[in-house]
Every structure is written in C-alpha cells, then in structure tokens.
Image 1 (cartoon, rainbow, N blue to C red):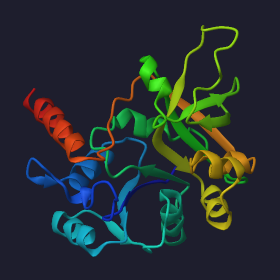
Image 2 (cartoon, rainbow, N blue to C red):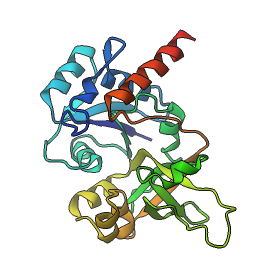
Image 3 (cartoon, rainbow, N blue to C red):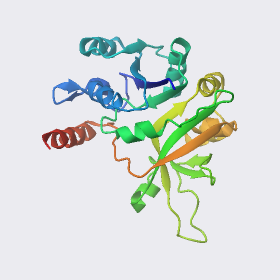
Length: 245
C-alpha cells in the first residue's frame, strides 16, 4: 500500500511564530519531526507541505522533500487535500509539525491493514487518559466510540458523563490522522457542520456528515505540541537525555 506522510508546516502560528524553524540542538524543529516520521515502517514517503518560503528554504538546505501549498488553508486536512491533488497515494497521514517527540509506533498505528477506496474513510489515533486533570482539560479532545471503535462523538467536555458508574476509561484524541482521497475531497468540498461549529474541533466535520472515522488505540503516546517557548525548552531537554543514553 502506498502511504504518504504529510507534515503540514505553517510559519505564522499565533502563539509561537516560526516554530517549525525553532532551534533544537542546532537543527530546526522541522528537521527533527521529519527525521522521526521517516522511521515509520508503514509510511512509504514523507513530505513537508508549507505555504512559507522560509520553511521551504530550510527544507532545501537539509534535503527534505517539500511541496508549496496555498496560504489560505485553515486546517491541516485542507492542506493535505491540496497535496493529494498532485501526489497520488492509497492513504494520507497527517503528522504534526510541532511534535518532535511523537512516538513512531503511533504513526504506524494510524495506517490500517486495509483501506477502502469506495467511500470516504479515515482513522484517528486515541490513547487512554490516566490523570483526572487531563479529563477536565478542554485542550484534550475526549472521544466516544462503539464496540468496533467507530467514532461516535468528540468533545472538549468529559464524555460519557459518569452518572451511574465511575468504572470507565476515558480516551483522548491524538493528533495523528489518516485519510483516503475521498475523505480529503469530502472535507475540501464541505462546510463546517453543526457540532464542529460548537466545539471547535475540525475532525467533528466527518461525524457531522456521517462519514466513517475509525479510532485506533495506542497504549502510550507521550508527546507534546510545542506551542510556547517553554514547551520548546522541555522538548530540548527530553531529546538531550534521549540521545545521551
């Protein structure tokens, strides 16, 4: 199966401008993210998708494959859809450009053994939450699913509500998603749905319109989105320890 890994990279982050180029031990963060992604066994090829020439220049310097995309994309899914118009693949995997600590096993896990090409289809990595504070954090997207791990709903609120029992495991969305071409085309051609507009969760669009989104669980997915300089310092320390071992 031909699987394309795509790392959408924007320069103009509101919280941390230019973070794909932030220095981590002498290399830009995008170098670390790409180097990590290419270790995934199920990914055939990895490219950077960016709208900024500064990121493209760095990719050229380090020999990292990239594609220039429009600067009007508001979501990673829209940027992936533009890539899919130029590069054919059986499956497209979105890999966050600000997570150099992302476990390679989680990237591989998002690729199912069989990908239907007849209907829009996508996958999303989820992991169990073990700390109560995580459940109440609105930054963590909680998920509900049926017995076959088909997505039912995603919310910033704890779901389901522990009304009759506390004997329940809470799971959260991890920012690794996979799509077939039809799923990306649907996203491109649709408008935000009812619950996406309320919760502010892009992925809810698929559920708003009844598309098949399969959740895939991983036991551990300890990562960190670099949203602030403080986050960057933490990542630097982790990587320093990792490569000193």
